[in-house]
Image 1 (cartoon, rainbow, N blue to C red):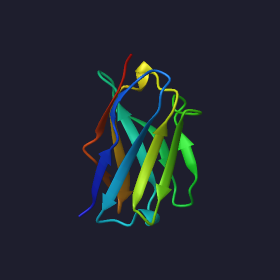
Image 2 (tube, rainbow, N blue to C red; image 1 turned 120 degrees about the vertical axis):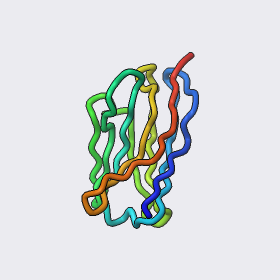
Image 3 (cartoon, rainbow, N blue to C red; image 1 turned 120 degrees about the horizontal axis):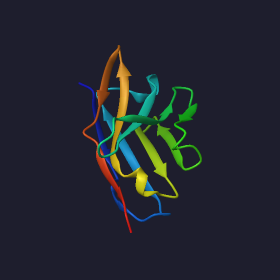
Image 4 (cartoon, rainbow, N blue to C red; image 1 turned 135 degrees about the horizontal axis):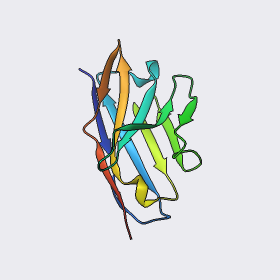
Length: 115
């Protein structure tokens, strides 16, 4: 069974950095595109970053220039580096992948940006 477990969230200060990690089991991530999405308080979940099996990354407009997604196929993990934190980055961050047309998502990790 596919399981995705996020970690690395917490309290960050504006202008600071956080690194989130997603550990996958039951699936070899090397075969699938991976993504991170975010749900801010009172808002719908949005895709913020994705990385293809060929290591091609794509970002939402709000994430460009500050977020970096990376994958380690040997460790079966996908990371999201968030730099220059902003209060609007606050939310629950989820790791996602689609396997045989089924969307899998972890339980998420909370990121709070506040001084």
